[in-house]
Each structure stands twice: as structure tokens, then as C-alpha cells.
Image (tube, rainbow, N blue to C red):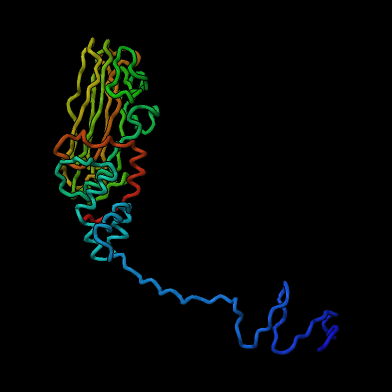
Length: 335
């Protein structure tokens, strides 16, 4: 047995061991283990578990796949999922799926009993449904409106009910636009493609376009109210219009708010723009703002419903509807 430092190792001493024995482990001596033998304390490895077999998603029951598709946004559903295979295509085209999506989005209720010709189209139209006019209730002064005529003392915004006026039927409406003693007209031009309506939807389905406006006179002054709505092509050719005769209200009236409504249906294909214009003037030629008051104007495009349209949820504000429309395809073959 050798003792002492081994030359060439920096003065460090190593204790030699006898052949057939292993060095002592820290914490005390251990019994020698013959060469080739394994220590009794070494863990024994269990055999590897068999690999789990891969399962195709298409092996799931169709009812489960339908439930999964219900939670996928319509854009991804049609542009990403539908082309995957014939099974997915057939499931995504099922009436059941689109009816479930309508229910999930709140477009219909559990007790909905109105006939629907195509639930997929119904879903898209409900998703896009909103007031396409910006600033309809004068909350942002004259913003978003084109001033076409600004006669007399010009357009002005006032708060309800106003002098010699009455409250509006909807308490959420707080303001109105008011005209003067010479003609005052303002308008908005709606670009349907920019609002998310693609050509196939407009030309093939031709959904209903519902236009509404509200006007009132001052109780102490007569006035004349005008409205004109035109459906126009991409190059602004008028394809359909609504322009009733001017409405004249006499002096010393009830100042009650009156709704004007018109629905465009079965109009020619090619509609890409909607022009909305309204206004008027007083009949007394008084300085100030004694002409008709207008507010809560709307243009709403939606599916045809034979029953009570009030069963629809209230359409969202323009900005909210715009965000929802952005989640839909900009163009799409519906079938």
C-alpha cells in the first residue's frame, strides 16, 4: 500500500485502495462491493409506459364537433375550418349550427318561432345589424353630418325638451338638431362595402333596409319637414328612393314627436351606397331656430322577419356594431 502525496498532483494526497474495493463514500465506510455487482440501494427503472395512440378529432361524435364549432368565430369557421374536409364542410353547413350560434350571440331567444329561410345568412345579417348613421342624436354636435343647406341662422343643437317642446319617447335621447327660417338640410352618405356588406350578400339576398327619422315642431311656430333617402350604385346612380312630400305643421300645435319610417325591399341589385338627407324650415320666417327639430335618425339593414320586429334585440351603437362586423369575412361565398 502506498502512502503520501503522489508527485505531479499539486501536493494533493490520494489514498490508494485495494483492488476489488471501491472508495469510501462520505459519511463513513461501506462494505466492499465486488466488481461487476450493483449496489443494493440503486433504484430499479420501471419499463416505459406504452405510447398513447393518437386519436383524430373526426372520431369525436358529431354532436361534440358541432358544439366546438359553435364557439369558433364565424370568420375562422368559414375561411379556415370549412375547407378542411367534407365532414367539417357538411357540419358547418348544417342549420343546427347556425341556429345555435344565433342563440349564443343573443340574436334569437329560446322561444323564437319566426320562420327563417337561411340561418347562416340570418346570422351574418344579425351580426352586421346596427344603425349605420353616425351621431344620430346630436351628442357630438354636427360631427359626421354634411351640411347641404345652412339658411337663416343655420343649424343648431339643443337639449330636450327645448322651448315650447315635449320630451322624446325614448329617455336615452337627450338632444336634437334644429333648423331656422330658411332651408336647412344635412346628410350622410353610407358606404355599404366599408360597413362590412359584401356584394354577394347585397345582390343575392337583398336584405331589408329600414330607414327611420323623428321630427317635431315648436308649439308656437309652424314648420315644414323634408326627408330624402336614396339607394345608389357604386358610381352613384340612384336605384331606388324614398322622398315623400314635405310635411307642414301648423302654428300652435302639440309639439309631439313624429316618427317617419320606410322599408326598402326587393330593390335592384347593385346597391352600394345609401344617401340620407333631412331638414326643413319654419313657416313664420322668424329669426332664430323655430324650424323642425330632428333626432334619432337610423338606417338599419337586417333579415326579413314576418313577425314582430320588436323581438329583435336593440341594435348596438354604430361603433360597437362596427367592431363586431370586423370579425366577419369581408367577402364570402355563402353556399
